[in-house]
Image (cartoon, rainbow, N blue to C red; front, side):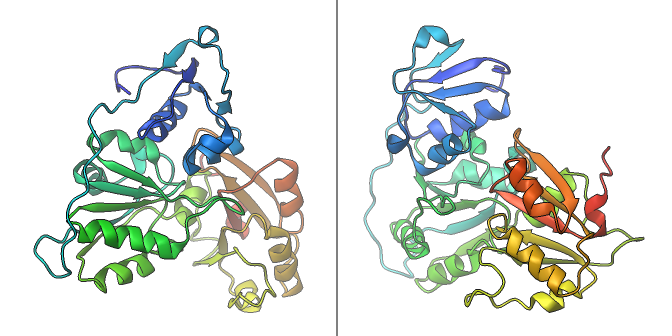
Length: 336
C-alpha cells in the first residue's frame, strides 16, 4: 500500500487473500479504514482470523464490490516466491542467521531503526499475531512470510515446530527474521528459540523490543513507577491462575511486595488473581486497570478497584491482548 495514499474513513474490500494481505490489512486498519475481507473464517491465515474474531475486520465471501469505496483485487507483491535452496551442513559458511526481533506493540512506529532494517533484508519472516504486521510493507517482494501466530484458546503453532522452522530455513542458507510483539525475552520464548538455533550452529542476532509490560501502561497514561507512590514494579505471567499446579509464583510475596503489579496474559484468569491478592492482604480497594489492544486504533482502558476490576473489564468487553496494572499508579492518567 502506497504511503502517499490515505484510506481513513473509507470502506475497503480486500477481494483476495494472498501472502502480503496480512500486512496490507494491518496498514489499512492503522490508517482508519473499515476493512472487509472476501473470505470465510476457515480460509484465513491465523493473524487475519484473529482480527476477524476480535471484530476489527468484517468477513463476507459474497461481498459486493460496488458497495465499497475501494476494492483491492491483487496482492501488493508481484514477485515470485523464493525457491527452496539446498540444505547445508551446520557450521558451513553458507548457514544463514536467525534474528530475534522484538516488535513492540501493534504500532509500527514503535519499532526500532534496527528492526526496520532487519525486515528489509530478511529472506524469511516468521511472525506472531501481535507483531506490528503493517511493518511488513518494508519487506522485499520476494520475502517468504510464515504465520505462526497463537490465538488464545484457539489455533496455534506448537513452539517445537516454530523452533524447527527457524532451524530449517537457516540451515538452508536463508536469513530468517523471527518477528514477535513486545520483546522476545519477556514471556516471548526467545530464549528457547535462541537455544534451538545455537544448538545447530546457527548465528543468532537479538534486536530488543518494547515490552508491553511498560509500554501498554505508558500509552494509557499509567507510569509503572512514580517517585511519590512506588519504587518498583513486578511483572508476572497470568496464563495460569493461582493454585494451578503449573504456577510457580508466590502470590503472597507479590501481594506484599509494595510494588506495582503488572500481569501479562492474565485477562482470562484476572478474577482468580484478584481474589488471591486480596486474600493475601492486598486491599480490595487498590486501584487497578486493564489496557487492551495497546498501540492499536482499538486500544481501550478500564479502571476499577482490585475487587471489581475483573467484572468491570468483562462488562466493558475487554479481552486479549491486554495488560493488567495493579497498584496506586493505576489510578493515574498523566496524559489527561
